[in-house]
Amino acid sequence: MSVSEAVDTRMSARAFTDQPVDAALVRRILQTAARSPSGGNIQPWNLVVLGGDELARFKALVAEKLRDDPRLEGEGHEYAVYPAGLQDPYRARRFKCAEDMYATMGIPRADKAARYAFIAGNYRFWGAPVAIFTCVDRGMGPPQWSDLGMFLQTVMLLAREAGLHSCAQEIWTNLHRTVGDFISIPPGQMLFCGLALGYRDESHPANTLRTERAPLEEFSSFRGL
Ligand SMILES: Cc1cc2nc3c(=O)[nH]c(=O)nc-3n(C[C@H](O)[C@H](O)[C@H](O)COP(=O)(O)O)c2cc1C
Image 1 (cartoon, rainbow, N blue to C red):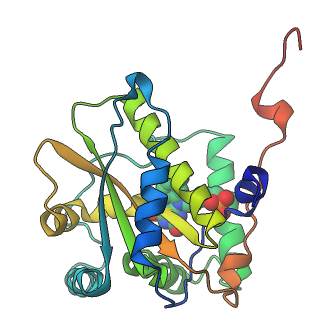
Image 2: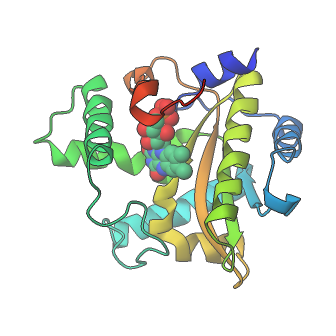
């Protein structure tokens, strides 16, 4: 697979089959992804990978939390996923992406319960057999968070090369205490996001979503080129 093909076919998958992913393959992807660049080569990514019984145990714990506190208001957030008062064009893009996603499944705006039930699939890693949590030292700033983002994208592209799909998941910040306790995040680190990894369920309508992108002229200008 070419890099262009990997980029083009990487889409967030929100339903996975239970086909297991070879542990050696996961290790290879993560070790290869460590070739990602980082300012000063400090490599500020820290990962915890869950699969098998450990993932099952974690998911059971999360299901219990969700039963007690369905809106997960108990744990707060360690960081804001979006800035307060998100403005256009970002706000409109976010809205459109969500509407397009629910449209693939025929869930109308008014059906809040069905929308919530679908989004709660996040807390099961969308059925993926491998779950990765990414953490960053609390003292790190935007440049290192950006490095972590590059690492994540590299993981997602290498996953495509290996026939896998993925879904990055910031939603886990809603459960940062539960995650932190379970995976033993050291006090000096914090959770950034999760990443579901596995074989995509090709029959699920949500996986047909091809999200839009702004044209080049909208986000760049060229001078002397
Ligand atoms: C850092 C990061 C966190 C994300 N968190 C979530 C999440 O919690 N749940 C989810 O369903 N999608 C999540 N997404 C997926 C985005 O919604 C998705 O990337 C975006 O809509 C573009 O669609 P595409 O990935 O299919 O190209 C996340 C993506 C990124 C990069």
